[in-house]
Length: 249
Image (tube, rainbow, N blue to C red):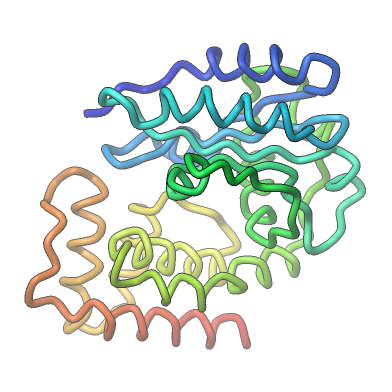
């Protein structure tokens, strides 16, 4: 099982690179939704006073490239938001800075991501508020506003077309994320990926259950990531139809 990076090390990095701007650092994702799984990232949100400058972005990227997913460690996903861009709330929110290892090749080529509109922040900020897990700074409710339910709903469905484009290259994650989206639309809750898959499995036709059950088992470290003989696209398309019907209702 991968080693877990100490979030306090990330806090030290952010305090060093953003000494006059850092307001709070918060855990979210699997670490706060039932515990880390074998394939879980360390998901962190940082709230700052002002936009991260290019030289600061490069320093953070270089340090995370050296530790995220290296030597058996877990991957780190870091999102930075400017307080005044998320409070008062507006849609779509702006992600000021993002580090994720799926962008590693771009970082290594010298690409430095800048601020951009990001509907995905709506469920992320909702998870941060519900988890209330600061590792630096005040409780998150002092820095970010509650996301209106209507904005949460439209945000979770906004990424469905992009997810379907990644089905062949990231099958497990796409299937589990689609299950989580459907669960959120129906229940109003944001559950761990395995819990969302369990909820959806009871609503799938028998022909699709083996696919989602395999995705859940791989996520939990109970099966190998092998999709031979499984109709993954048919299952994903069924999940998308369930999402569309739930959103319309």
